[in-house]
Length: 471
Ligand code: ADP
Ligand code: ASP
Ligand code: MG
Image (cartoon, rainbow, N blue to C red; front, side):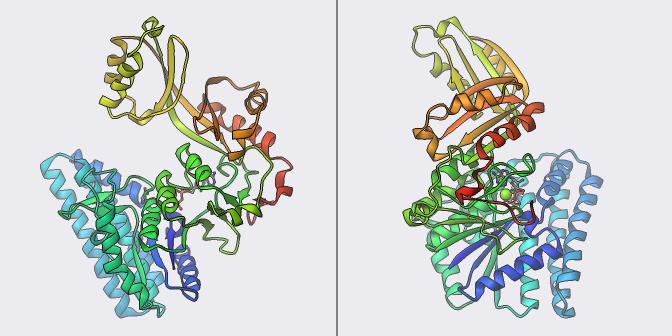
């Protein structure tokens, strides 16, 4: 059995959805899959805009944006469902979701306050709608499918906006609800990203969380593969939007993939790997536009890794933009204890996660996501240290298991970046990454230089593949 997750661009248009249906149908010839979908691309962003508009009582804006959401899905229905009765049934389901969305908009407009909890309700419509269209389209093409509201299975805590599943309850739900359907050969189509509390309140797992949903469901099902279908040929040596020469990586270890995801490679949500590791299920990252391309296998299986031994140092380069550096300087650090405790206590109080860090005797430099930056936090830091801030920077990290045993990597990195102003340097404690910070404007130069340094001529290694359709 497989869990097949399709991301936003893989279900964003009628053509994309049809392509995904073809891929699911092909898998069904081997074994009945569980299909987990994202919202159509752009829809979650639009729902957040709708929620924000409702929260500031801009009713007309919110209703106009909801009309776009409605139109998008009705257009998909008209292309993808041929049978008139079935199309009508689908259209009335879409109308029902949209009228619930409009009711929510009006409710928030009256109350005049948007909370994380109500925001999650807004966001849930994207996945509910995409799966409803997809299931109707598959049914129209003669497949035995069942649409499932994942909120009956994915029971989470009530940390709205970043909910975590209650494992035991969910596993039991999967056994009771999903397994029997798959066993009898019915393809199950359900939502990524969303869940519900025990009391039935809608939650979300955080942006990009559909990958995480798929991995969790795969682990609870004890599947033999978790397939992440997206718009690139697997995990690549760098984001191909930044480095046109980026190559697909055929095989990676779980730790490399997890590290890369945490360090910013958007192709996988950072939490995807943990459930797969727990049950030792391989994760495949595949391109729905090139279903026959090999994509990437993420595994710890020595047999699979053996045929793919890799002598190069770096496997991939990850970039996280939209960061800022906070430089904290205090003579009180010198030879005293308790300073770091005080320092991190401030970040903890504000719930701000520290990304990269480097320290000296009297100073600490760290990066945080620009979105979590707050002047109050800085004021608190200033009460016991001198603080400087640099905005508009990005972290760049090179990742690879082989870095652990290698010397001279830092030298190679930095001699290659002579012309780039490096603002901070840090080596991950896992020893499989080396990271540094540059100004946003230097990212493209930095990563292309590094890519040339570490990957030119390595195609011969067999572990890298030129993505389909690229020279
Ligand atoms: P989906 O909607 O399918 O979840 P995402 O947009 O979340 O897709 O992730 C896919 C995107 O991740 C790619 O289009 C690519 O631009 C970006 N990306 C960033 N780093 C990498 C990498 N190392 N390998 C592949 N893609 C990457
Ligand atoms: N639709 C959600 C988002 O855009 C979840 C996902 O696509 O993984 O963040
Ligand atoms: Mg994604």
